[in-house]
Image (cartoon, rainbow, N blue to C red; front, side, top):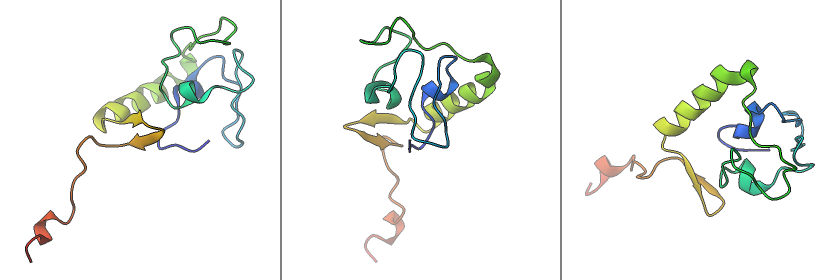
Length: 100
């Protein structure tokens, strides 16, 4: 799995995936759906096929989870059209060079 920040699944009590592989397994899914991994669906709510399991924070990772959530807010990160966009208004690094 590759992404800028880890998905919420990584901090879930039900997660059975391995960060060293591409496994995306949990108690609810053999293969966690992209809509959940990419954050299109907040899995605190039911999702088709989740077998009654929703996100439940693994308290051992509480601090890490809170840090990631804070980073997402700071960077205003959101997903759209299967692409991660880090900032709503990208900074033009070369604006000082315009007109030179």
